[in-house]
Length: 246
Ligand SMILES: Nc1ncnc2c1ncn2[C@@H]1O[C@H](COP(=O)(O)OP(=O)(O)OP(=O)(O)O)[C@@H](O)[C@H]1O
Image (tube, rainbow, N blue to C red; front, side, top):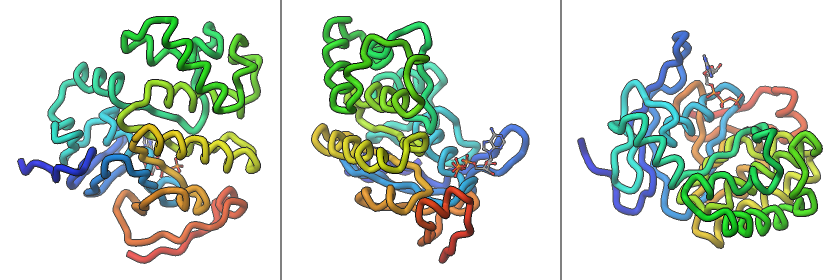
């Protein structure tokens, strides 16, 4: 086992992943993510972006290959150690908001901090700050069902940023937002990441979103390719074809 380069916060080598039903997910993906960078993972739908993020974050264990976080092997960790790693060091944003319906908005946003052992009062303060930054502070005492889908997604983003994770995995984070909202929310996310030194791995099939990243890695059919020319947003929503060079 060869140790990864020192300046990569995440490093993956030759990741192979097959879903339980036999569908190929990844076919030998290698990459490094530098500390503090915003890395876009692009590719058309079904190209393996989500699967790659799940393997890098320890949510899935690759069938073959290695994942290292700060020079510690993740691929050899047991499920509990990987769970603790995700809780303490990683943040995750899904394409659609997944909130706890019984908790109000600020409690949802404060939850990861409280799970890490932060006091309720400090977690609440941090959660309210992030909700304000994402323009939903006024809804702090409402329950998720009282909010629109786009507002709930802002709560998910505040919840992921509040603990200032070492690495934030954002899987199509602005998918449920209207186009007009997307740029503002993405700017908030990337500005917050840069000012707090949070490394971001951002899966997207939109060229405009990828343009906000420092660097882009492109996937096609579970493998890295040199470039994938993604169509503009309106076309991509219609699953238009993309051109690529391998
Ligand atoms: N749970 C699953 N079981 C079986 N096959 C799956 C599963 N999840 C994803 N796949 C398949 O694995 C491949 C990669 O999917 P993945 O979701 O990683 O791609 P993606 O680039 O994130 O796509 P999208 O942009 O639609 O989210 C696709 O062929 C997909 O159909």
